[in-house]
Image (tube, rainbow over all chains, first blue to last red; front, side, top):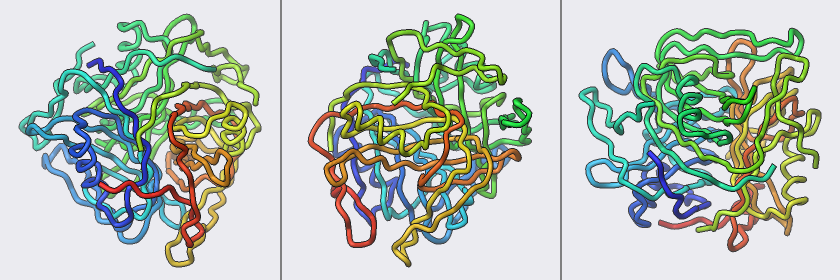
Length: 140
Length: 140
Length: 140
């Protein structure tokens, strides 16, 4: 779907916030219904998910300690009438090894986010019968 | 090179499509010659490449199973007179381990893409004598 | 903080340049004080950092060889009155394994960068007493 660019934000999330919760809260506070999100920083005790096509559920992966947030990438759109953030992360440890998944939880030590609002028709997530809420497909 | 921002797209690739093929097809269908591309999702049986400076060729790395698509990052520009997508990916497995490379192939389970068109002079890839097609360098 | 979008650049860094040094130099040359930066490519002998909350310093991680640059993500803002680049990377080896951290150094084999200038109040980094120079927090 095509959008018109809206507001652009570059900001630091306060230390101690839950990263996913902050993005949702920021969207609600600022009336953002659709956006592209990216960022870097450092997260404490992140929990990420791996969606299994077999079980149709997310497997939780709990990572202990503080990790470099190498990439935060995703979007904001509408689910159940409210802004919803879908974010994936990659995380580096003290040896430079990298872990990652679908962001479930993570306490911010540092997070520098770029949020690019997109204006247009609401982009809505609908349950697809597999515990995944997805937009309609865009055919070629 | 400097560009003027063009159209902005946020979309879901249909399940079952080849991700690289879809990006190329979307560019052709919509007359996009230059763009920035990013995205997240989940890919089945991705194949990525590692370019070796010694052999001057891509080594193929075949990954079996479904992986979280943690980052899709790259661009669209012109090669041989047609839109060409250059995309890199990072991929997470059920343990949270991460793999990645130059995207060669990968069946979409879910892919949510942000495509930002850039308008200006064509940015053209030319073979550089090492099996790599690259833009001209931008000197400081 | 909210910004107005400025110039958009898509460019190839000349082979042999230090990636971090190039981004700083490009910002200085073009008078860019705030920007979002992303990119892909291939880096030689990258050195990345892991910030330890305990020691309050970066641990250096030296990676030997040429790596696919799977993600370059970060920003440009102002530190000590000059443009400063904060960039994180993920890097893939010939087996598809991924490493990463805070970019300290890395010689460019190939680097294709997207730089999106942001116009507004200066976004300034200040030392926070832990060897980290950070922007003010943006409360919800």
